[in-house]
Figure 1 (tube, helix red, strand yellow):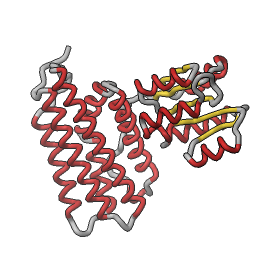
Figure 2 (tube, helix red, strand yellow):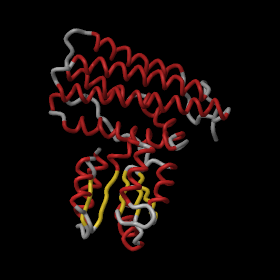
Figure 3 (tube, rainbow, N blue to C red):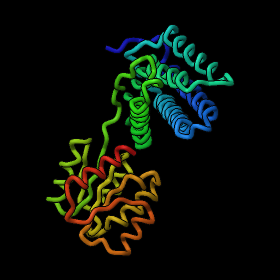
Figure 4 (cartoon, rainbow, N blue to C red):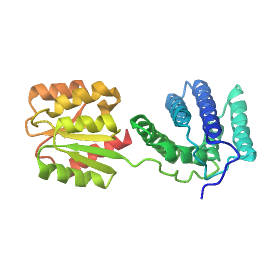
Length: 294
């Protein structure tokens, strides 16, 4: 049973928004301090962009709560001690960034402590609860999951002398990857759908028009489409989909037995992945893994 929280849900979301903005500013300043270390600076700058997106997510949740007059009750209590712990840690991080001679290992240490403190489970709780309000919150939920994976991958690649003193345990998952398969050939779309189902939620449709409606309704990590289809072919579907949401450009994979020179030039120009039928299953799986790493 939900318990009444010390803070109203809107107050919690507002606090989280301000904290995410604060963390984003910390990462921005840290990235500027390591401008000569391009890889680390770029990594911190990306984290800053992630935090801005997280703050935007909280704004969407807040707007929804205000519009719907939602009286949602929290199952967790955000008390003063928890807030003080988080804000105190961030104050120490800010003081570190303000110093002239910043040590990389110290920044990494505070980054891991900030990402693994009480802030993280509270944030993930709200994100998991409201992550599928609409298509935009689905997209941001996917990006939040990428943010967590990005940090874990970065820590794993660090040399021993830069490793943080605390272990970064696996973050909770808030987003199940979603795929869309578009093909008028029932047998092939079921086959491709079965290959993708092991990696996430997979939907299959038989033509471009159905696919376009799906894309307008939900966000997909990967869209796999045949080209030759009646009514609306794969390329026309792609053009309309990215016109609706330009962020989808990097999420498409095409396949066809008829990859003409003109089509290949179009794919190369737009940095699109494609496969010639018949294609190997391992080749298909490798490209899907590239999508997921992106």
